[in-house]
Image (spheres, rainbow, N blue to C red):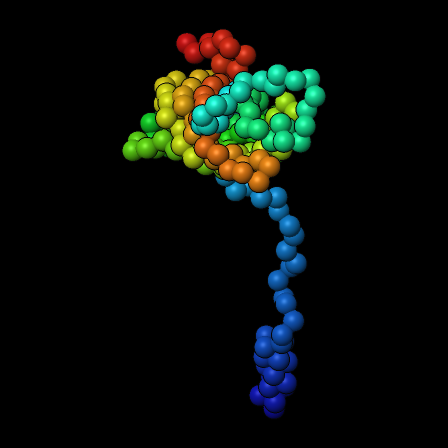
Length: 190
């Protein structure tokens, strides 16, 4: 008689397990952390200057009148960055991730024992208000491992592909970054 009372209970459990309704709690959207180094991150700041690789580039406009054509001439770009720095296992793997203070996107410098590289996109406006989409290509500079964990600086050559007004040009320039106790230009790294 006890067998008959367990049979309906087993059938009920089997039916519930085979149902097409989700039994896991609903998921929620999490912000994307793509390109962001893992915690703990150290606050960092930086500056970037980029110049187009063109012949006949004019540094400024001779006329006070700005035409649409003149606004789309390749121009130098300079802007400040805010970001974070992370290093795991000394001299093994380091990231510096940055967003333009006045702009959008995230760019990253990354270094391992074997290589340095740059990646990511930034969108900034030039001095005439024309939007420039910057795709980072290479970083060739000082090591991200030079200083201890509590602060440091790195600087070097940066190469990027910049698109504005429907044309894409190669830009070269310089990046200067500092993190931790070195933010503000003075490194206290005893």
